[in-house]
Amino acid sequence: MASFLFGAAGVVLTMVALGLIVILRRPAEVDHMMAAQLLGTGGVTILLLLAAATETPPIVDVALLLALFAAFAAVAFVRSASDRRSEVSKASGG
Amino acid sequence: MNLALDIFTVSAVSAGAFFFLAGTVGLLRFPDSLTRLHALTKVDNLGLGLVVLGLLPQANGPFSALKLVSIWLLVQLSGAIVTQLIAGVVRQHGSHE
Image 1 (tube, rainbow over the protein chains, first blue to last red):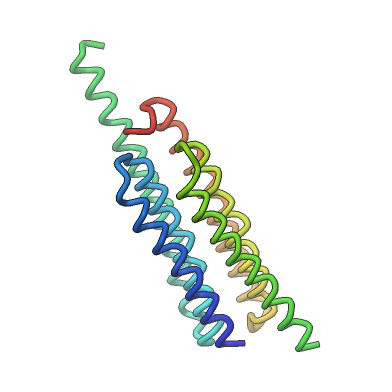
Image 2: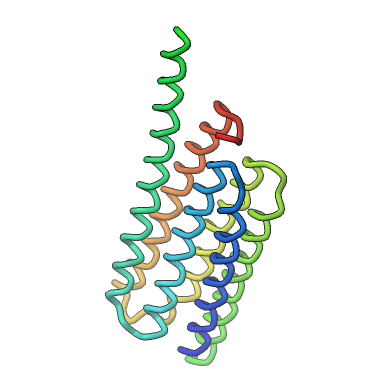
């Protein structure tokens, strides 16, 4: 069972890495944020699989923190985008 | 009994990994940002959900099983909110922001 779980973690890691490499070469910032979200969810999945495969329950806590930080990262991105928009509207007199 | 649980784990985790494949392909192939967000939420909900479902029989004790489910619920909740926020940014700025 452990080797299957390691294999599944490897498959998910390959998917996420492939997505990151291709997405980060695109120009749009929103796509970069989505790649970071994919890494967040994929990272949580990989850590949960590894925790079950190696029977090391503390890894589950790491997964929990990664899920939390992925949410924070996205909120920070949205805030910085809306701050830039209000600066633009101030500069143009609106 | 043990064999049945192992088979359940293998099939659910495989289905979850398949949704990661589908989500990545969607993220790479879909034409604009909103459809790519749609692909991303499938990974959040189904990919992680099926993997957690598959890992539940392997958890030792009801407490760690509950912990796995609560991680999935946290990812569900934050994923839903974050997707709405990102879609709002895309609507206001266009996808090149």
